Image 1 (cartoon, rainbow over the protein chains, first blue to last red):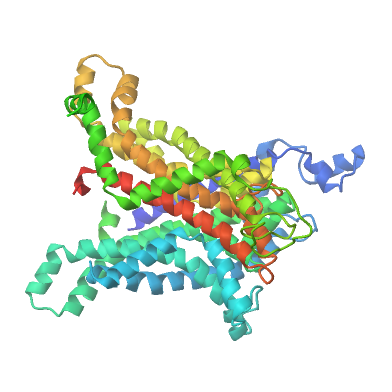
Image 2 (image 1 turned 180 degrees about the vertical axis):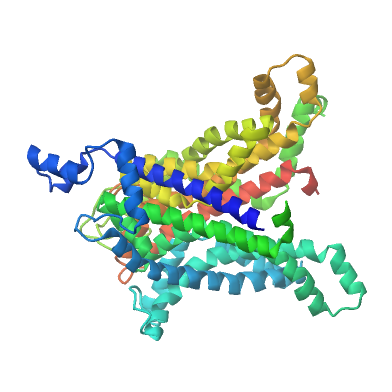
Length: 312
Length: 292
């Protein structure tokens, strides 16, 4: 177990180093002199030299990279165009996006997993068709469009929910009112994927020998379904949930833009639109780190659920 | 029996073609998908002749006008004909869908072939990298490209193509793994064929049907992806029409003209669904296990 985790953590570290180099080189590849940008478009050679010296721009790239990583490891991602700390901006935005992500996963799991089980148990019956058709629609409708439709129905027509904005979690009810539509929008697509996977792995489990044995032992149908088939199906579904991470990160960006929520996702788009390179650099680095860390966590959970992985 | 039919029955390749066509025509959903796909393609190519108005033609006397005989789907906030913009917008979607898929194929297939054919450490490295890239948010890639090279349809297409490549690498690698075990590979080796000949003349032609299916289901992903990127301002730039930019414009007028947010979305769903249904149908006819 220890060796497995160590190997995975080592691989994660390598990916992270590569990602940081790509981000660093990518930002350096942007045309234009950063010193001029930092010096508020001034062309005064003395000032530019001073800025270059201050930000180590006169040093070789590996030195600059090392300096950047060193500062990043100490929580310093530099300052953006408005002289605000990038790290601080990111830290204040992340909880908002995290809340959307968690609520969406909750919606996805609460809808997708029971629906998948029902579809598998009632295979070929009307329930199955309703669920699989629903999943096909859930997969085909782009979630940003679904967001606009929900705003039209529930905010503009019915006035049930606020159309946009975010209220701090200190006001739980207002907070949830603002979160309902974003969570549904992001959750439906993921729940469709989960449902499909749950259905097919439940069908596999229900046809397996141990299920036949359990039935032969005279166990109740509920016990066969939940204690035997369902628990074994959860393993594949957990990995799949890990693979949804990319969709989740992209989805948070889109959802926050639609619902006017000033989270980390919206910050990503703002940073590009404002061509604020320190901010872009910080945002992408944090995203890559989150991606690597969550993937590592999924591997750990997976190995806990499935002992065979640890040995091989 | 006519001469053509007799020829078809004696030539095995022609016979397979006839069989595939017969199997395809027996699937109404797949045929419907193909018809819609052809429809969107024709609309995209012949947009200048089909669209009732030019994409940028404004009519300030009919701003946010309701659907009428003059403007079948109404007009937007600049009095531009919604139907015409939908028709012009099909171009961006189809271009992104097609070229992103071609790019993904060109990148992924050779890598998959090499990994699957040579195996060993080459395969291990490629497989690990693919695993990492598989779940990487393509949007972040698009954000990076837009930051470095600017937001445009071309850069959005590049991001979508690169984003789609990992899945295709996996498919090509898996197919090569299986096809390498076929008898004709040792036969070709015995004949003194080089690795390149085996890969490109024996293995690649045998995976074309799999690749065709994969391409058909990669396109809708790219179409939706283009719409998302353009919606976020990372793709097609206004005033060029695209279903994504139209939705972005519509967002400011959800109160006054909610229909402007409905039509482009319907177009996206219809196009994506058609390609997906067609892809499912093609998979069914190529895969003997699902033959009825």
